[in-house]
Length: 95
Image (cartoon, rainbow, N blue to C red; front, side):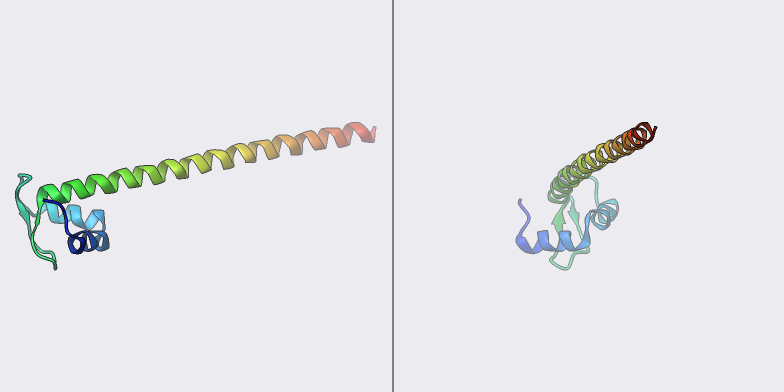
């Protein structure tokens, strides 16, 4: 059974870490009901599927962040190389 909008909104509000904590307090099978939500009981399988979606989203965000960090690192190295070259050119022209 898919999550309703209300259930999805509550899970989003709680966040993956808090939802994982609730899973530890529930039964082991995918069909087990996880209690303690304002919108009622939610099936463990549905919560696990939601957590998998959140993991994919988080991984994509981390990859994007890593990509920009790599670009910034390359730009920083290029800036250092240009700065060092400028110093050498300045010294060479001063002779």
